[in-house]
Picture 1: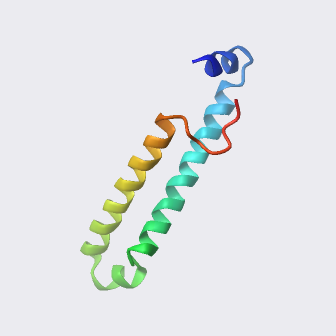
Picture 2: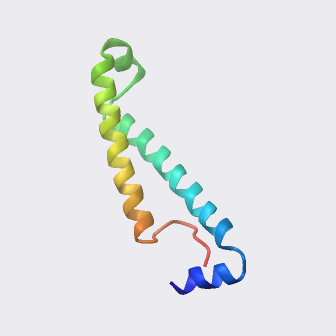
Picture 3: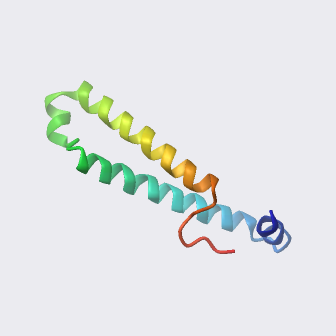
Length: 82
């Protein structure tokens, strides 16, 4: 990939990859929070039925992981600098 070669030769690849990693982590956290709110996976549910809460949160985290991995695999990360 041309961008990576340019970044590598200019010694900016590590900071670029760290930026992508930070964006992916932020996207993951935002997605988990939004999906939990949308699906009513709350602290109240956690207190009332921990096993159900864990199942639902695991499902949400797995879906968020797939979305973020798909986005970063395709290189469609918001604010990525070339």
